[in-house]
Length: 164
Image (tube, rainbow, N blue to C red; front, side, top):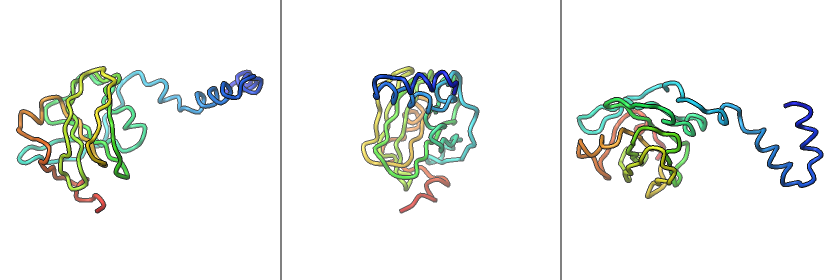
């Protein structure tokens, strides 16, 4: 951080302004400068009945914040699985996301709690109807075309390893 910037913070007449400036410089530059898609993430194979899904694993806070932002396409049976350490009321939005998606909020045992269609660049929140650890984004219509609805069960390593 340039010394002149630190001096400006120390001389700020309003403590709230000084705090706000410190918070801005504490945000990692990689998050502030997100201008393109994140590199492809490691994948895991999931099953939805007879259908195989190749899901990128978004596990770190940075991977999850970026998600599908700035990607221009999502192929066939590809998706992104968001994995949290603990169950919570998880919500997602489509800021800087160019591909229409459907999100499945998934319980520890692989059961789909609810699905939500999300439109490109829409900043409205889409939330799980119950606390979950998993959320799977697929190209919009993927679940519908295969008749997969809330209550259906997915299988794969993340769900087998989920804590009870």
